[in-house]
Length: 254
Image (cartoon, rainbow, N blue to C red; front, side):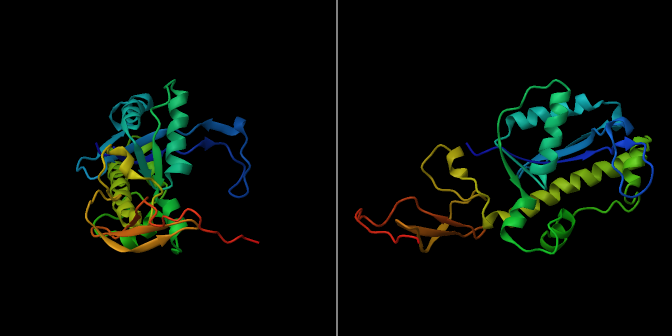
């Protein structure tokens, strides 16, 4: 059975607080008038067409929409997001526990921002920049009808057009993240997808089983057959050590 991979993105409300000026503000807890919360989320299973999206516009409260997201997290083997390790997943967990929800089943994470930082030197690792440069079908939206902070403030006022724009913005973040992930994944995601299938077949992160030999990979103690995925270009290597001599000497690092 292939892994269940969930692509997710959330939108939160701002913290509302009393402040004394525009710059260099150190806001204390007793200045906060209203704390942040999750006001919208979108998610989809990798390679499936349907995008799920829920927000607070239809009379639902945060607990209602988070309950639906909890079940997706509980089902997922892997969660993908842009800056999701630092932001989305931690924010979601914070609201889960505040609403008295138990931890969902454990899952691995793939953060497209961290993949970009690890393998590339882009001018920016933001979703806006990378989707513009790398994605052909889906790019991060700019919500021109409600520019900048206005989209959030109008949603909180109950503006139906703003909520519709928020939903579209949220959905496109998920679609752009999925497309971006597929661009970055051949460079390495750090997860062995083969362990999820429970059989002897070798598969790439893209799901392909079509490889060709591509020389050898070497380590300090071994030589391994290297392969090239014909679909996405990712590199894979066999676990079988082709060097049989167990008496090989290794160079001592000084």
